Length: 296
Ligand code: FES
Image (tube, rainbow, N blue to C red; front, side):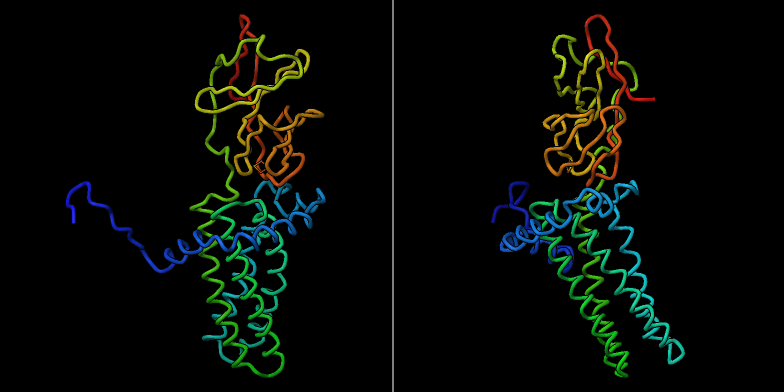
């Protein structure tokens, strides 16, 4: 066995949850069913209003993580009351189980909408996350039925099993957000030049033309319409799609990946799934060069 720096490193698995995540991420047999489900979800959320609401576009923040607090909170409190609340808390526990069931449905709809835009490892993790949540929902629904038919002991056990699965699913959801950066604003921290900075010769941007230019660590989409030159970050805030390859029409650019549409003038979202507007830059012409700077 070779020793020293050339010795191959043994792959360490930190804990069973990380091992589970690793296994799911590499289980490519999930891809077939994931692809079919993602297409079905994509068709279901096609109307602009549905897409915008489920994506959190009017909220300025993805909707799914906001909604998850409701079923997790309700079911978590039900578990506490079931465990230590005694007979006096049975009615309250039943109500919380029902609240969790009711709020899990819109939460799942928002999550499926987000998930349908993912690919590769995040898509596999998201599929298992959704399956686990569906299992938890079924267990809690069974728990509610058991409670209503005077089988409280069974209802408590079903609820506890649902809560265990919910916690595992929550771990997967956290992995998607904090390790895979799914649905994190991809332009966060991309500030561009604070001072006027030359990016392109004037004659390199024809009327009606769009060009990508790199400046001060960011890439900028430049578009000319008559005498007006508009500039916004070329990395889509949704999942990092190339806006410089997007279609420009009616003063807006549409991302080629999932169809988010942004106004060129101010970066505001016309159509989701993006929930964060695009950074825009001021432009001017100086000595035959186009200059940009961060909007103030
Ligand atoms: S990357 Fe998803 S809409 Fe642009």
